Image 1 (cartoon, rainbow, N blue to C red):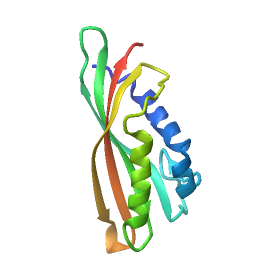
Image 2 (tube, rainbow, N blue to C red):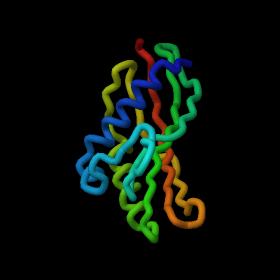
Image 3 (cartoon, rainbow, N blue to C red):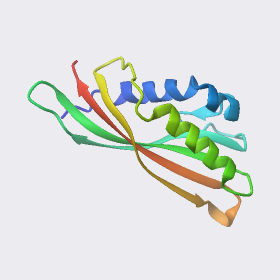
Image 4 (tube, one colour):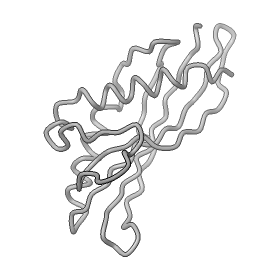
Length: 137
């Protein structure tokens, strides 16, 4: 296994989301690698946790990465958050991504979890994707 592609994968996912026209229409530039300190917009997307598992073969070290992208909304219902979550899924699922190290073989939607956050004032959807990468470092 190699975890060496993880930073390149994260960078590619972030750039893909920041460059997506549908997401820009919903969010402007409110797509974060880490939520900034202080006030945040009422609707934003952030990169979240990641798990990686070895999945090399005889030709290259590789891994399956499960990465989370989170949509947060202060709207009263889930509709706005689900629309943005759909745009995130459309932006990532099945697309080819160029990495600065290694190569992305596949990007697949894995699951989503929608819920109210504390006291019901915010909505949150965690989207999990599986990415298969090979490390040709």
